[in-house]
Image (cartoon, rainbow, N blue to C red):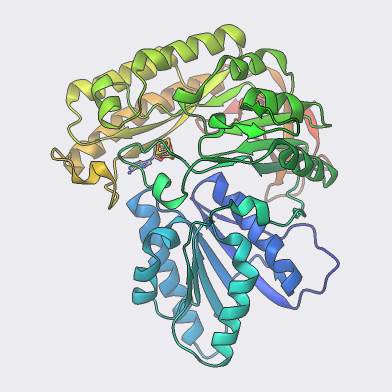
Length: 460
Ligand code: 5AD
Ligand code: SF4
């Protein structure tokens, strides 16, 4: 998935340089891209929707699966071709950020020597310095790019600017970063570093700024967001449940959080779903597999029963809640029986939506070296069967809303006049045709039609 970060609320400083950021992967990357734009704004960079004629194009990359990484090199090739064309439509400078930069910094410069900067997710606070350095190198025609993939002793959060460009009605707020869990298939602990939680007051101050700049909904982000354990002013350590309760005291209509790990679910977070009206009835809780043998081999450190207990407890606290998950098919040594256990878990939970992937070998992770890799055609067949079941559940979840009237926060414009897109409390994507002047507002919508991926209705 690629998202173009578009221009936020302009700030008064003169922007004589054009910056374009392409963002792949998770919401953490979307958040980081917004931060990069903030950081470069004092240097005169203004965000632009297209790469043509840009002074700087940054590719904020994702390394989680092979396909995600491959795209970077084809995109770089395309940009370089534009650079070489006579009409000067190509970007003057190219930077590669994110997890591919972290994991493959040297290889990127070897394969694409025209890249000016390569910098990992923990280095964004040094971006102005890097850009200045790269511009000097460019002026002096010095070859070779600037590379920065260090993990600083302190978190980058301590150095990021306070100002956050307006993100619109629905805003992301990063509260936790990194991962120490080392699932055997995953690169995140290597590219994003150890778990770190931001202090409570920094988060609440940022939440207030987002609200002041128009946010109605705040999504608290973290690679393991429910592992949050931030320090409050009185020296105590807060969990995510407590943090959500504090954010709820601000003038915010909706609160969400993602992504959670089953191992970090606690009673306070489950209780928050019962007690905090702004907390949306939706939980993204990746399980990856329904087979205990696979869960063990993946180093998930929870069983299928642990997962089912969390689902039951959360449903008891908040009967209306909808669940989403991530699944991997074709992990090394996955048997037909293991795969069937995953299908059975899906039938037992009944998901409102989910993401599912074929296992992708990531260099440097333990699973990449395991014997028993699954042939591609088996992975393909399993993914198709899994998705058939998940899509059927998603569709019937959506169908259950036909005729109902539900509150929707409209946070995106559609192509046609009056067309608006938004999210339901359960995170479904919804659009209306009669949304004139309702952007950024919550309205009650009567659902008329549904598909697997979206709902359509009219504002009543
Ligand atoms: N292969 C396939 N899927 C993966 N994910 C993480 N690493 C891999 C991999 N090597 C998936 C997991 C995770 C989601 C963000 O990406 O399901 O929850
Ligand atoms: Fe990757 Fe596992 Fe950490 Fe999630 S919990 S980021 S899947 S290592």
